[in-house]
Image (cartoon, rainbow, N blue to C red):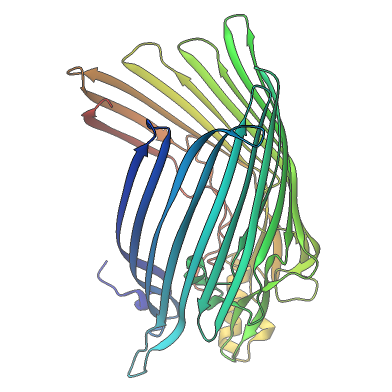
Length: 460
């Protein structure tokens, strides 16, 4: 189309220029039992954006994001350390992230700097692993120091321990328990730069000045059994998990200025949160031509106290938004010959809670604008007020078949044909028009799609 984004009633447009480079060096010593690895990488993202409505020429933005990291680690084996043979891993890494986000001015207005952030994370780590016929033990410790520079400097240090124990009752039946700590630093994340359009208004995300780092303590326990049924081979894993979130990030919702805009302010929830559940995975090799893999997770994700998801006083919930309590997958692979291959995959996503924002005609002083809003509500384009919707569950099925022709011992030609989202599972209650809630999106992003092609390359 020849029109500019701001000539539309409502539009979102992004253009990215992404450049990256990666380097690594490996050195093996002690008969290849020990290994030194050094690595470095960098990525630069240049993004032009438009998030606007009602032909707003002031909704253009420009973002620069430079991320680079370097580090290394050394892994070496010892015949005996304390009580058994061991492997030691020691290393460091340093990551620097620079982000600058600017709102571009129009009609003679100057540009507005929204975010200028520099975050440097220096980490060191030590991991010790012991293995025996009955027990495997792994203990690790990492220390990260985060230095964030924005309006002011924030310097945070965090210790990150982990431990896991594997006990082998037999070679085919194992029990594992583990603990690990994690954290998220109080910084602006790249996804925060995606500005939602709700009711023709921009919705941005900001961090509270008092935002602290979020930490997590995760506990897991699992059993793993490998067994045969006649001529088939099976691998069953059942795992329970519990994660305690301390000072978890949560969004509060409030009006911003006097132009009808509002924002999400990221704060720390006062009473914490938790995620707990059970996961099961089953792999089966039914024959040398047919294999299956199944997985299903049931979980509970809750804040200890209700958190606001909307503007109204009663718009609160303990549940995590956009987080299903059930999800799973199934994969079936059939190889009737060396040349032919067919795979069917199913992905299940359970229902979830999704905030849905509308408008109230009584909130508008302009009678013409109020009339337009009322007409949009009557047509079903938008809703009145705000609601917490429960989404549908989705089962997405993908099918892929391929045929290989071996040209030489090292090269092959492959023809493939597939269909994604066979049942065309999609959201069916989108808002419409200029006042729509552009953030009210859930479910599969790709409709039923047929793909086919030819590959030529090295079999290795």
